[in-house]
Image (cartoon, rainbow, N blue to C red; front, side):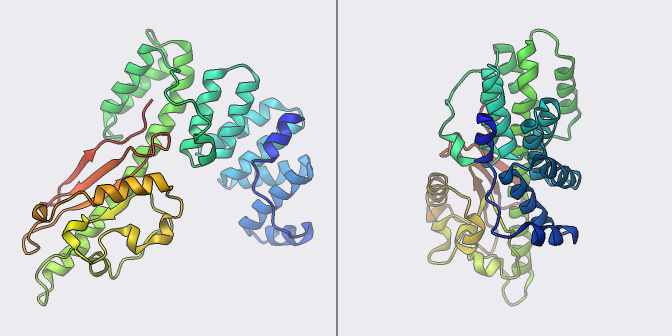
Length: 335
């Protein structure tokens, strides 16, 4: 019961709405209301109703529902079902589920697996747990670390056949990999491939800048590119949340706004202060003499921290004057 109380602390607080109101809204397919209703039942320790709501949400691919169902099953003493739902949620990047599994593994004496679940929770957005993790903790054998290195090489393009071939070797779990390596590696690779997916945001943002710059260059009244990001992105609709800050070096823009962080501050509310400082520093390091003549070309950059355990470590991409997309600094999470 003590463990269940710890889990309850991880559930977002339910709104001050009564059950009937929430049920009525949920019955009308108001999914946020259904989420709140699930949290409401968890808080009341009404496990049977929490399971009903949680399973329904999980079936609609809302991962917090899988977490609710997992917690409720555990509270009813059904460990197998609870683990199944929590694992499903964690594998879909739901950080509270990963943290719950980490606590379970810690209670079971599986220290390395517990650490990896906590690490996943950190990478998936549960910032408060990052500071609790022992940095540099070695959980893989030398063979496991070598396998990670080869995956990073073969999966630089995640669609390459070499990537799938390498991953197939993991399913065979053959020597020199240990049984614990094979247990732990899939969790680590979920962190790695999530970060690779995040990199697509950098590429999309830079290609959007290129497209907008070409409009300016082809405008007979302008005929040149611009380092003023307000002008470049005047018709651009930002995303609600960004990981990467994109734009131009401050030295090229003068007093004009040069980065998305300046334009779309609301979209960077999840960016922590240390990462923000490192990213600002990167965009401030250029020199005016390095800037291209806007009649002929420009360079734009996308910068993020994708390794929350190392918040000053940056992943950097740029689009060069010939519209080539280049990774300048590899900041993918360390094993």
